[in-house]
Image 1 (cartoon, rainbow, N blue to C red):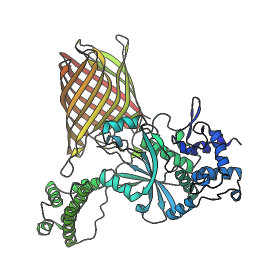
Image 2: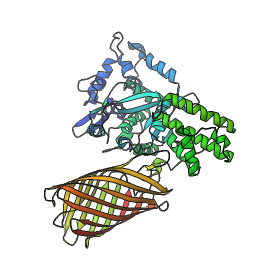
Image 3: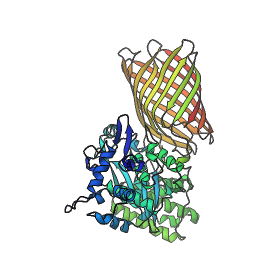
Image 4: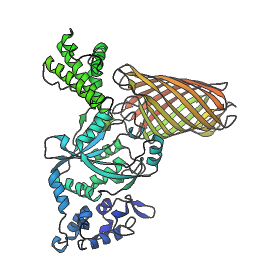
Length: 591
């Protein structure tokens, strides 16, 4: 029957084809019964069949239980008589299913965490909803890297190169909601799935046999979202979701692939506490916002609300805003339990005296993340640099830039990997690598009365820069920075960043230059399709090739459709003693 070649057998073993045959993405040797099982589907199949007839060994889990998904599939295909097996069924699994009482399944997408670089792509997990009416009593299925590292650079390096083991876990959904909604300020989108009872059971069986089994975690491909797809492939064999991502996996793209396969039936929006605070604040004038903040901080007595000559509806809003902000501060461990309880009781007392029922604030949901532009971008452009005409082609595998249409994405966020541009100067027949942005991430998180986040950037890669001879040279650049951003109206962000810059390459006296400086800019959405970025930047290089670099520019992006745009850039710069004017027009296709 050649069952080892069956797609479902290969799904259960996480096999993927290589140039030399097969390799399982599971790295834990306990997952394989044959010494060659990681690379040989046939050997692992034969070892599994033999093991099903092994005698029981005390407390050790029998293979019928250890590999319950494999067993049920083989028993069905080969018509194995359970009565002939030492262990005819897996009672521990049946007890777990009896406790969970699975009814439906939901795909969960916590949106990007602006101030967490590892979370800027977002995340996915699954929930198994019980027969209970409350979604909070669902069970969350998560796949994540196991690490005790807290330093960002170490975490990033190890996550990129597979130095962390990744494990599946199951825990109450309300715990994950608190982590994402309250602590990390992340909105959540829930996508109900149309899996039936038998499919959910198959999903749980595969999860059960993956318990305590690790796979090396890779940030770009074998990550949280990709490994979760194996559970959906096990539930519904016809999907083949894990075969649709050859090089890298972005969480929102997995949502889109699940949608394309007809598994998603809708979308439910769960705003974070931070989003709720910002929404309530937007309904009040600034003096009322300050009053609510002072109440939460214990600087103003909640009973003062009863005496103020403010219309009743506004008093209720102020009280509710103070209550939400106080709870948020407590979730961030910014005050002790005793102080929280004391202030919270006073706010609740004042709120009860204001009358009226509990307000259900309907926060308008933003555009769904899966409805935003696609993740890959092809760019074709023409322009002029110091009077020379050029043509340019660029490819960006991931994922979103500051000027891209924000529909479905967070305001002021940028995360770009491997953005590559080749530029051809027809006048002297030169083809140059104009840039290779290995990483270019920006988080412009605006500060307000209730939140004071830092804005930051990190950029590293190769780019053409003017040298001390006035010619372009390819240099390596490392450019981190940090500062502050502010909303000046609903559609505009003003930012100020201090920056450092390290360049290494040609065109400098010592082949390197280290500098410090600052940048400022205004990012504004003039309407739903037109976005403008006005900026200036100056760096003084004091080490290596000493010089100043100043640049100012205007960038505009026009969204033609959901996945096409037109971008116009113009900039002026002065490096060493050389002035430059550059202008370009680019057509972008997202795919």
